[in-house]
Image (cartoon, rainbow, N blue to C red):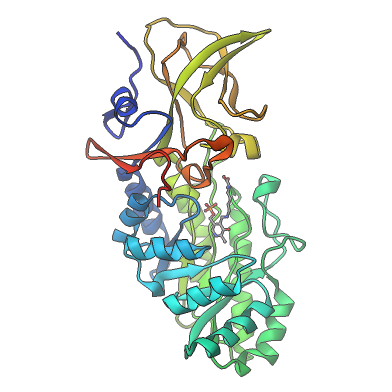
Length: 413
Ligand code: LLP
């Protein structure tokens, strides 16, 4: 008899692995909905006019984004396929936000034609390009925002910081002011109606968000003098998730206080919609990656648990040294063990390791199942076919029932 048969959203891991094969992402849609509602309630309690434009890059599984759209979420997208996915999910174009530091003319044209509600420009040239494209496409008006680089440095992994002056993201505050003074009124079709800021991901310091909000308000107030009415302040995403129990955690209430709360108390007067592009916080703990042990192999002082998921399926540990809890999901024997395992995948790269020296509490054997936890954000959405491996399968669970969201080898959107 096996042990530790972990339940995911009320469904047994062993049966999920048998039904869908491994490796497989399993997403609890109820958890996604709960986190979304929690965030929405915290923000709207402090300021009522909020659009939660979920960051599709963090999780682009159709069933996930559809569940969010059904609860009123908009979409933050960074590609033409993202626009299409948001449309399929049921998001109205006016609730779509198109971001990205290097959009091609084709991408801009597609966003304009689709009627995306806000295109956030990351250079003044991009604003001019949007205006020119509108003319050639015969579109009368498009709302644009500027992603502003306020030179706010957040304490996070270097690969996840975006807010510093020298980063490739955003436009310097002074350039935005100059553009709005001299050029914005001359544009024929592009109307500067928004400001945007995103200073990085996996941030737990409320000061960063408070400063960002204050900077946005101060700039919006200044731009009024030059005839630019900011109708939308987009505070980006970036709220961190505690992957380790000991990680510093910023609660959703404190995050909402630093953002929507600061805005509500600010000297801003008039109407404005606040936009949030949270991704990670909404979906991180909705999903586990179920993987089967192919081999248990001693190598010197190390005991490897070689599993069937690889860095192509889940790249966060290899790319950022990210920590993810790993737990037994089902074991064939009831043997306990205090020993440690290094858990690694099949890809021919030494960085294809999910965790080192992990105490799993069990003695593993071939065929056992492990669950890599909190894999809902930047998990399946960053998977690839490296080593000519098929794209990972994705299943969802809801109300005690499971369904296939994306078969192995197919993109999950
Ligand atoms: N808005 C913009 C403009 C962004 O660039 C991002 C994420 C978000 C919103 C959503 O941020 P979130 O709330 O999810 O932190 N692959 C990395 C994370 C990269 C984040 C990229 N931008 C990881 O696995 O940690």
